[in-house]
Structures are given as C-alpha cells and as structure tokens.
Image (cartoon, rainbow, N blue to C red):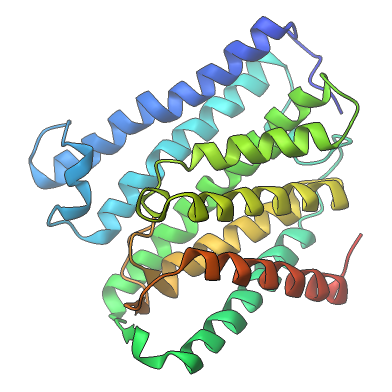
Length: 288
C-alpha cells in the first residue's frame, strides 16, 4: 500500500515529515515543560538539565515526557487524513488491510516473558544489585499513566518510523534493506539525547540500532506493524513498571530499582540473546 492519495510530491513528503518532527520537538516539548512548570510553579520553561532533579512525583515527570508523543501522533493522524486522505490505521498493514491485533498481544506477551527470564537470571546472579521499591498507591497511578502514555509513545514511534517513513522510503528503492537500514539509523539517532545514550555513549546507541533493525525485521516478517508495536510496548512497559535502571529515559517508581554497575556491552549481548529467545517463543505461540 502506497501513500499516493492527496499531495504526493517529494517536497510535500519532506514537509510532512518535518511537520511531524516539529510537533514533537517544538510544540510537544513546550507542552511538556508547561506541565512540569505548572506542577512546580516554575513557569513554562524549566531548564532541561534540571528536570531530573526537580522535586516532582515521578508520575508527573513521566506524563511530561510522554506528552510530546501524543501530540506527534495526533499530527501524524492529521497528515494522513488531510495530506494523504487515508486513515492512520492504513500504516499498520503493508497491504492497507485490516490489522491483525492478535499479533500485538503476541508481541507484548512474548517480549515481557523474555524480559522476565533475562531479568530473573540477572537477579539470581546479582541479587544485591536490586532494591525493592514497590509502593501501592504510586504504582497504581504509574500503571494507569504508563499503559496509556507508553501505548501512545510506542504507537507513534512504530507508525512513524516503520510506518510512514518506511513507506516513503519504499518509493525510493525497491530493495527492502533500504527502508530497513535507514529507518533503523534514524530510530537510533532519534534516541541520541536519551539519558542512557548520554551516560553510556556508543554502546547504548548500538542497543537502539539493534532494536531498530529487530523491529524492522518483525515488520518485514509479518507484513505489518502489530508485532513490532507489541514488542516496543512490552519493552517500555517492563522498563517503566518492573525494573528501573539508573539513567533510564523513563524515570519511574517501578517495583524494583537496579543499583548495580551497568555495562552496556554486556546488555547488548543480553539483547541479542533476548531477540533469539523471542523468535523461538513467537514461533511457538503463533506466526503468520
């Protein structure tokens, strides 16, 4: 399925992409700062470098972080509706058909199982590195915030990178590795300023790059975004709700907090193991 309805020249496509990114970077950030500033009575422009140290409930901080993704998703929907005269959902399937949502749940479930297996092994090997931080009321608010907000965040990233941008690049080359490679690199660059990347450098960026290639492969394998959205969502929900790491992009009151040293090269190996385990599980539970 192409995006040839409506204005489809390359200048328009580039303009649409810049508009979506601008809604995230400029408008989204302004709204996020306004939320944080309103809560802290600091106005609508707190310096970015001080956000992590502000005396906020982490749930409000999470809301501020996720708000730009909701606005960017709304902009993407508007571009599809008014620019291409197509519904947003048509980005999910390569053929523009009806989404097969059962593969969303397979992606979520299998990736959470993989994460639990790997994290449990880590806990057995290094129990002193984990601290129990569960508090019922903050966690309930976190759960509700995360399920809604992270669903929008993961949905936007997949619909934009491996949906809209992917389909745009398919118009450049018939070779499938071209959109796979470029969207994975752009996905990695999109996370360049995440706290993990700033703290741990290129090994953290390699984790994002590998994850981008993996999610792109899932799109190619299944012919749609349902599974990649599920994996992306499952990964971020686990990080926000179950185990929180130092310098995580999603700073939350999770059940556990990891206090040990972090070796990103080691976690890159764990990601490869996790991907292989996921492939086994997803084939076991059902593959197109």
